Amino acid sequence: MPPELSIDGEVISDDSDCYVIAEVGHNHQGSLEGCKELFRQAKDCGASAVKLQKRNNRELYTSELYNRPYDNRNSYGASYGEHREALEFGLEEYTELKNYCEEIDITFFATAFDFSSADFLEDLGVPAYKIASGDLKNTPLLEHVAQFGKPMIVSTGASVLEDVKRAYDTIMPINPQLCLMQCTAGYPAEFEELDLGVVTTYKDLFPDVVIGYSGHDNSISMPLVAYCLGARMVEKHFTLNRAMKGTDHAFSLEPTGLRKMVRDLKRARLAIGAGEKQCYPSEASAGIKMGKKITAARDLEAGHVLTRDDLVLKSPGDGLCPYELPHVIGKVLTSAIPCEAPISWELLEHSDDGEDPSIGRPE
Image 1 (spheres, rainbow, N blue to C red):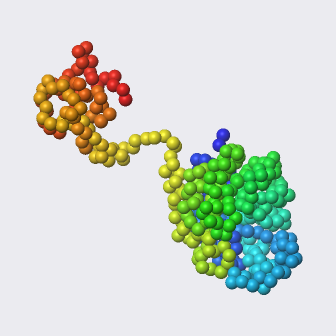
Image 2: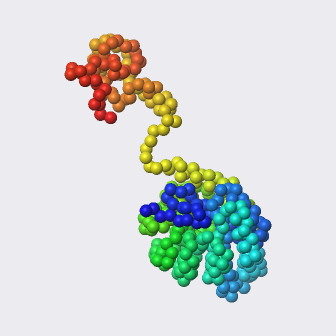
Image 3: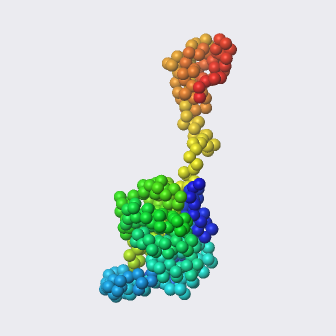
């Protein structure tokens, strides 16, 4: 049975539209209202879910890193810790944002970067968890989140296959609700480093879980490639203005890009179809206009035995198809026909045994 995952009532499977996560992260710049606007626009663009990043900064970082000076154009504080705290929402903001997402009808969850953040999100009641590439090797955190029994979306950037298998083996015995995301942890990632073919590798190696793509590339087209290769979940960073202050804005999609990506992903599912070659009624006119039929190359008399030189192939294709040519050559005309007249079975003598030459021909 093909794998599927259900998040907040939406089923993700081989037969579904792509599940699109608008990764807001900290592109809200610490503004609650700005975050709501990002959520609203993501909803308008057709995203399936919006996502933040939850950190307990004191727990997560060493004192050295937390207190390290952080002086650059994207800084929101004098030290790295101050910078991170300025962008971090607490329970009041998360509760308000969760309620807002319920109002506008879009799924809301977050990445848990540490144990207390995972517990925070569980108390909040999020329907799923994202695990960042940096925690793919963090088996204690993977086990902790798996025990919540909710869908887990795990990015696999900055890793090798051994790391992915270890994470899979850690999570699956506890919680089989898993999506593995091909990811390259470059910000932005170079196209030659995206390795989208890994999507098919994952589908072969992990046939019981949904496969996705977490993209840090500067395009809307790579998710389409990933979808065609089998990814059924796509995560892209989202912003209102790529020129805004912050490290993630430059490789994020703006609303126009996100809207087009969602549109094209929906079209991709329809365009791929069921793998059965079909001829549609909508093609009939073009098929006749551009097709060919067998016609007379010159005026021909009754009783003439047709040769290849007597026959030409001309449009429109509203008569005998060219593949019938071998079955027409050698037949005798029952009446005279002018140049360019279409050849039909009715104009040809039946065989000596009375059999219709149109019967029993190889198709």
